[in-house]
Length: 109
Length: 113
Image 1: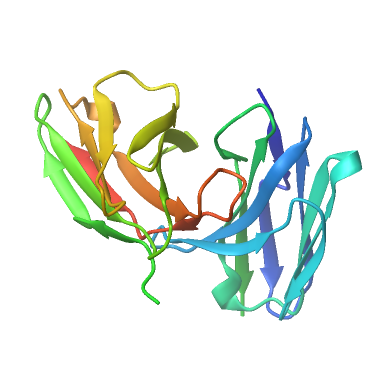
Image 2 (image 1 turned 180 degrees about the horizontal axis):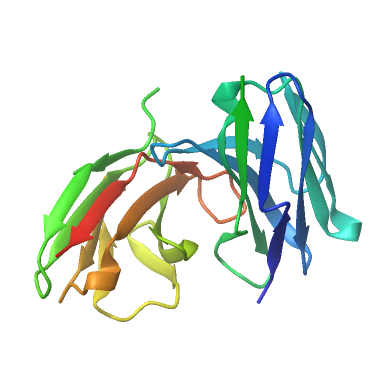
């Protein structure tokens, strides 16, 4: 089945810094989503982005489907950005979302 | 517009008992998905229901089962609970199909003693 790898596994930033999170996947995808899981476990949908580029405030994402990777950019990070960021994909051969292992982000004031 | 809701928020059971978890999707969504997030194991796909039918299931034993009702809400049942079933169970909904954006509920934390 499709494999999903995220990097880095952990990221520690000071408030105001920028960061880039990466998601590599092993097959063509028909769905790719980025999520933020807050400390209470809630998964917040950030982007639906199987291809192309999207921006939402301080966050943006780019998926290069032909090269099988996606990037999540966080600019001017805030303490509320702390949590775990997951990439999840489904491929044309699987009827389910496969989650990466996540990037744990900690932002300190 | 109301999001995905789940109940209960927390559930404590003993080994061997049965647990029932409930999920109400976003209005207009016909697909409901269940995921398990156990400590150290990441998010694992459990089940996908659409239009009352089970469309796909993950690599879990048959004691994990569920159903979807005519109003598209869903139940997840876990029989013969084992200690390792302790986890956060997340429900998501989408318009029909896995290609659509999935929106998640707040989860049910199940603790098996």
